[in-house]
Length: 144
Image (cartoon, rainbow, N blue to C red; front, side):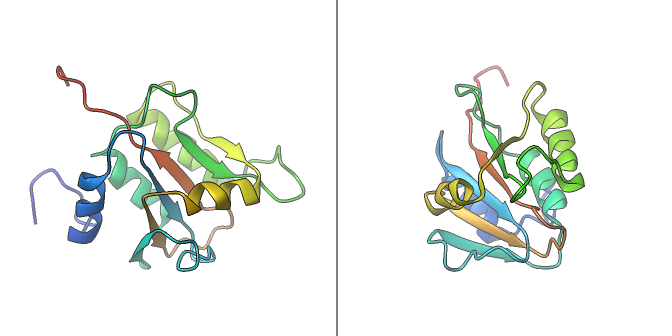
């Protein structure tokens, strides 16, 4: 155990977060997501929700404020303007750690493509549909 680090963030995930550079992306995906086939390294956290993992990661990792959007979710197939409750929770968590930033929804296959190019994937035990989020890492400013 370490002070100030959420215990859900084990050594493999901490290594990934530390190794990522500015602009690299990490996906947090639900239990249904085809993570192993997507390409990037996968860390499995089956016993945890995507919202809990998002919260833990954002305690340590800043989002990129040099781009218009730094957090992406998957649009609901057949209803791209619908926002599932898990998406609203993602938005609230993002807003707590990165005021002014919001979750941008992208089409399902565009989301898959973005995840394919990610640095890593965290596969959670999230059972709520569309419990997927992709984060673009920002920088730590000198006065932070």
